[in-house]
Image (cartoon, rainbow, N blue to C red; front, side, top):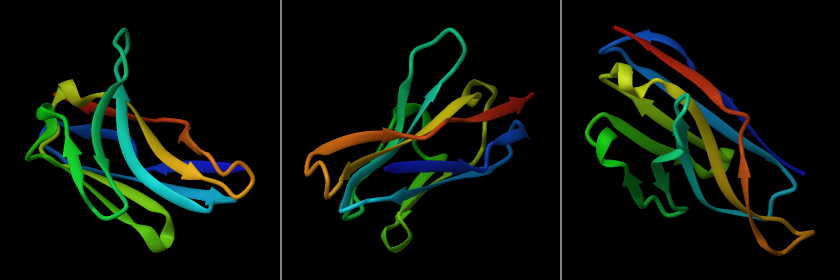
Length: 121
């Protein structure tokens, strides 16, 4: 019933920028927290950034000062602006949203399909 669709991934040179977008759609009563996670080959999935419905943000230390997470509640969309990209930022980036649906009336985490970010040196 709930789908998260991501866009914006691709190949970029070190020092460049990308903006990831994620739109939530479907039968949604309310969205609480939203966030971005990433997973490199052979590594575990790590938190990148989260944002609450009122705009409170949290960032991994590795991306502070370079990445910015924002959201547009009217469009059920979360963004990740990625600046000064480094080769170590290369990973599959996943969008996450905590959603309350009228049918379930229970909070549940939904995930996007993942989008590849590649950074060349």
